[in-house]
Length: 149
Image (cartoon, rainbow, N blue to C red; front, side, top):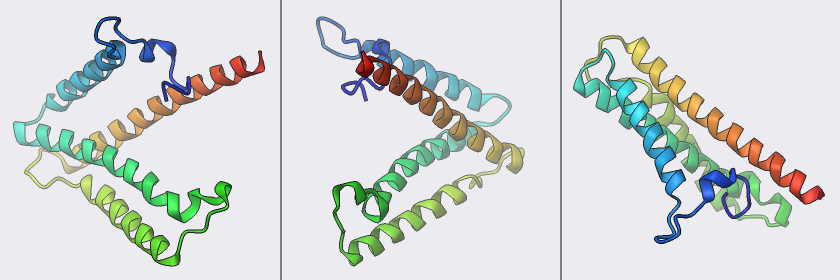
């Protein structure tokens, strides 16, 4: 995303000596700390850990859904037709991943409120993905403007 100029330049700036994306690392660290602190408000340790772990699992699962979608519908632009067995395997993987996402909103530890637990996870994952989509769209608009010049 940084190489394609989809992210704002601030995220991709490298530290001169070590060549690491310090701003990006700081951004992820601050967001992670904010989510960790928010998960602790009004809940016990087990519930806090479970909510963070479940939200993180959903983020990974969404990435896997995209990977499973590639053989099913993502190769049409390349005029490639994956074999049927690969489409079936990708479909099974996608369905299993969707089931994981749905079941992840239900706590496996004792919680104060099952509804609040599920709502927290749903809101966090949707909000984080919306923020990511907005960053992507802002970068895409900028890239298109630069391409027109």
